[in-house]
Image 1 (cartoon, one colour):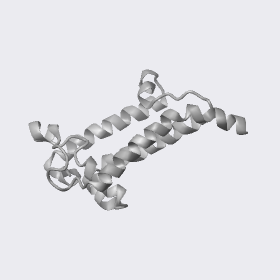
Image 2 (cartoon, helix red, strand yellow):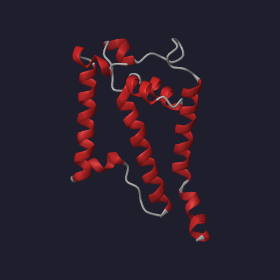
Image 3 (tube, helix red, strand yellow):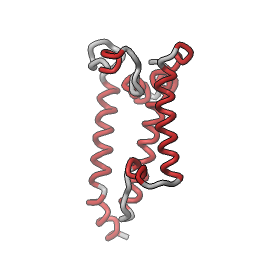
Length: 145
């Protein structure tokens, strides 16, 4: 068992580096409130086109999640909360496969192969497009940041 674990540690360098980067980003966003003007640059889509992109409100959502406030996080950007959960799930799957010495196929690589996983990814992309369109309409204003 000890030999298997010692062989898995070098393989886990990429997932652990990814976790360190994402963790550092969350720590920074938790410390620097994106709700205060001038702390972060404005969204270029909002600035130039005047519409909310799917990521608008994502920093405020991450800030609220980092402080344990799920309600405000969902209010700022519900899609971002789902993305953070999906990222955690994909990362955990990556760690388990890597620790077992099996290859990991990133989700975008799965789009090249038809099947149920491909359908799920296309459905997620369609849901994100619908979310973006809906949050920019008067009857979807509750989804706007």
